[in-house]
Image (tube, rainbow, N blue to C red):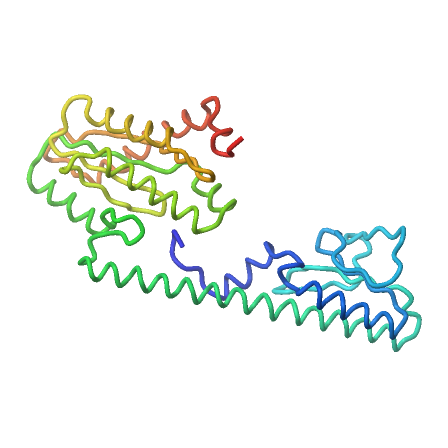
Length: 302
């Protein structure tokens, strides 16, 4: 995960909204089950997803159009969210009505078991991944960010303080932020959004000189310090980084970075005082980039 691990409790509460019926059920087994019940009871059974799209039908529902808002049938709810609706036809006796409710309860339990098992497995994998990253941090003296290899925020701050104490001026303070990281995360998930962060980090390092100080100081935020910066050097560096992002070719991700920079010109100033100014300039640049012709088309691979 790019921003740390979400608790299992929060995961179970929130993630159910992204599950479809075919992720919650073995559809062949579910079809066999409903058809067997229908054959014995002579009831028609229709399971639709949360939006009313047909999932499994046992019996004749010709001409029937589910209305999950006004006539939702028997709701199948997991983690306090409706994931499906069960419609029952010809349940004329009290016994069959109770049986229909029992079927809905059974389907609810099946979905809940599948959902909790899947999410718990993902949670365990992320805990293991987090442990590996922490071990990496320990191995490298807790200087580098495990995902990108850039300096982590704590060590970056330490390097900035060393520059301050050395009375080095001028120093370029650059803020770089990935444009539409969340779009990639929402569309492709954590693996691809993490890869996007790694790609951008590699571009920032490749275009930098050895003396540049590069830190990942937030999920998709980087800061770069250029001690004894020359005229035009910060602008040229940002331009090269953005150009390298633009020409990067990939089937899924389209890296794009907004950059803002300011200069420490007085030894009485501190780098930390200038970070927010660099961030302000970065957001101005971000607006320009995201409103530029062709930006959205490249992002969405159109």
